[in-house]
Amino acid sequence: MPNIPHLLAALALAALTTPLAAAERLPENPQVDYSGFAALTGDLVKVRQSHRLGWPEFARRAAAEGALLLDARSADAFAWGHLKGAVNLPFTDFNEAALRAVIGENPGRPIYIYCNNNFRDHRAPIQLKAPAMALNIPTFINLHGYGYRNVWELADVIGTGDAGVEWVSSES
Image (tube, rainbow, N blue to C red; front, top):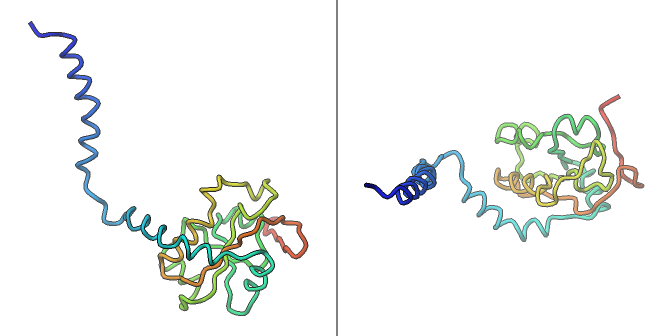
């Protein structure tokens, strides 16, 4: 007669390990490269640090001829409010064609980025994100990954009502 407790333990172990074994056999998706993304992220640590600007310098450079002030937040967030002169391309829409349409043919064009976490207001339309999830981080990484190397990030935390900050809204 079989030993019931041992049989149940064996069945439980098999049930627990079967999904893991099945997951290990899944083929790699050639259109998703997590290792490549992780490597790019690591390569950009020092680059990003040297491409962060305080508000006065950021604002001055972003207003220069040929510069692009890019807001990668959602279209709704952009409509609720954004820095004057910003152009919206939601991060979820980043691909080669969309980036080229907004940035132009010159991959060396200076691009200035900001996100909700650059504002101290912390109320609609600029809800604070978890610091590690701030949109500046994946925006910077993705722009570099698509070949745009002249990317500059706002380093400061500012208020939409601060002197020198021009906050505009498309909503009436």
